[in-house]
Image (tube, rainbow, N blue to C red; front, side, top):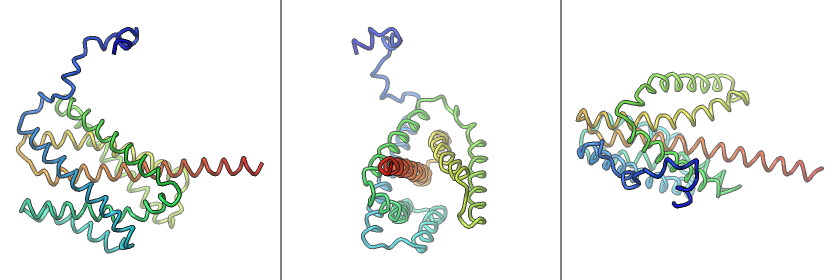
Length: 247
């Protein structure tokens, strides 16, 4: 700390109140309690996803039925009103997300299991930093992102549709756009969804299960894309090393 204060480029840190970093006085107690419920439910669903990934890898149950069941769980949340039943369905959705991820995780683990840990830690850091940014920002400051994100997801869906028509032969350029564009889009969605959750809480729309589902989708989407990017980069590095050895 003394070294930082002595550095000319960091002199502005001298007047920083480090005790204020953990405070969220700008959020009312009711909103803070709602966010606590949201992140508690999210943590439980992420744990269920880990169990689902292990179950899917151990018993090879992943298939079309798990995808259909996941869609049914997400759809069922809009129909079920009892909070305890909704929590059960929500955690079941997390479990099924883990099951559906198990083939990808098994493939990566067979080559470099460390990449899974790296992607998970990276996703957690991104999620925490962007969530805190949304919480500490002024109210409604990032809500303008909604229109741009809707356009971005429409473009990505168009790329997916084109890839389906072309029989999965999407060009490398389009695939890179879909991969990296999707990563940045869901990173922005963390900020947008967090501020929307806060605004809903102020408006007394405190459906913490639905809010946790939005954040769960964001978390999983970032993790998958980050894992794929890390895996592709590792494969390219191995290819370069093999070429050097052949020379």
